[in-house]
Amino acid sequence: MGKLLWLFISLTLLPGCKRQDTECLSRIGKKIVAQANSATADLRARFADWKGQKTGLEESLEERVQKRLRWEKVLADVPIEVVSVGKEIELKGLVQNAEQREKAITLAESTLGVERVIVSLQAPEPPKKEE
Image (cartoon, rainbow, N blue to C red; front, side, top):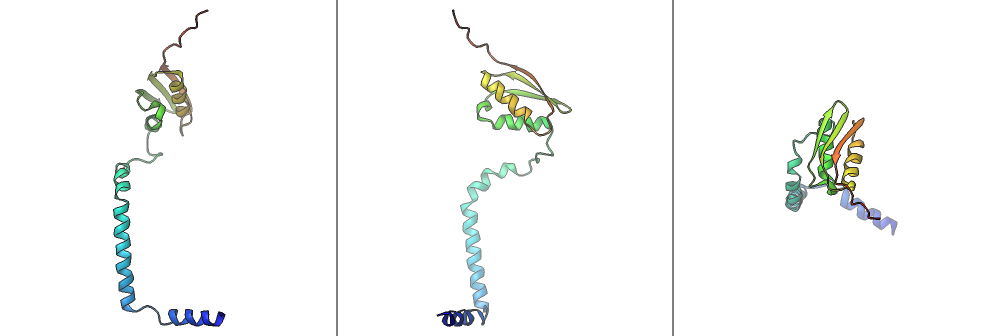
């Protein structure tokens, strides 16, 4: 059985590829590339706006914090102003609840390059319990 397998492998590999084979493989490769391009066209269109954007290290500290706040689902519709002075960040604005306030602070504090966060976010007072 082993000798038969060896014979089959040597007969198929020894002659090498002919010009017809390489042209056929080239056509197949081009078709695969065309199909892959059409299959990924939607994804490439979605990410087209990422082209030309700055990398995380090229962005200012203010831009990095602002981007993180925008991408957070809880803070998506909350207008938070981010002001940076050196490695300090100040968060200004009106949030709807304590959860949004805490999330904004956590994101700002965990952003690369931020050493201190000044919080000027206002949240409505929680309702007082009647005794």
